[in-house]
Length: 304
Image (cartoon, rainbow, N blue to C red):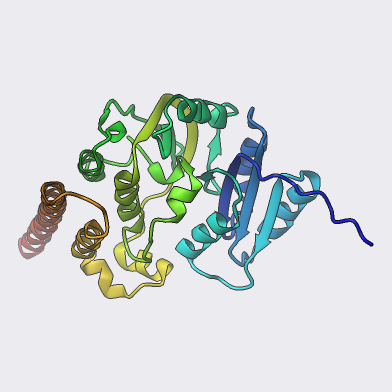
């Protein structure tokens, strides 16, 4: 009679790394996760059919550290699906996604877990981050607000929508530390601006905590043009021309699935309308400046 192997308890934290063709940058991310002061963790890698040296690097780390679990997709399953694959493979109570060109300070997990321990309402903890541009320039900003810690879903939702038009430096909740079961229950749809929609859904799901310390560095690339991003996400190209409308429609649809009072739902819908109008106005202003630039160029050509 064979004796079954002993059951290995799941780790407290899963760090998920979705990657495709990241051999030039991924080792920094791997080393920073494995150097955490809190070591009750697993590092789950989902390799989305990389065609460079990513597989060899990841398998080497998996052989040398039992906390690393490497999974390779046989074909490209898409960006969002690879993120979701990491979450489905994870076993920890808490989950953090990390990009292949990101890194976290050794105290990142321990500081976030302290914040969770101090407030059992929280579903997500964020930290201040430094964003490193392709030109090597570093940018960061402190988040001074308290609304995301509110017990009122609409207050958190409204604050998140406001921040979507303030810029990317203040918070990046997708890369915070989350309660995995809460996050796994939130539906996601492959679409343009899905990350912003998901952030708003997270705000409705529960209060957030924040550690006002720079504990993470993220690589920052100029956003792809709408049609380029549509191809990358494998969504119809026409969505690039209706991204604002589709985003707001998705948010309004999701509000019907959340247990809100009629007054709360009206307030949340008003916040979505404000987001739409701000985005629409910004697009119109950019279009006007482009048109004026074209007119000035045309006038210059006719006078030479």
